[in-house]
Image (tube, rainbow, N blue to C red; front, side):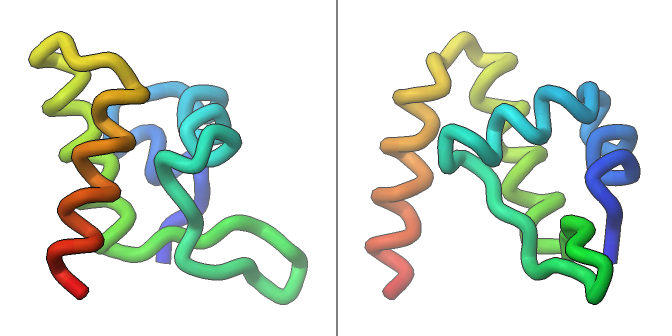
Length: 76
């Protein structure tokens, strides 16, 4: 499991960006530790990398959210 800082470092982003993505519902921690720290697992890292790829392609965060929501709905 990764902390928010570790996830940010692996994604090449700031900790603040990760927390912003969480606040708008684009990314969620897998769980919280006993001390209430955010913990991220490999699927969240992969989702972050997908978000970054879409951002690098010029998509807006709202468009990325819609794409990821549609993919999630198709998977269920």
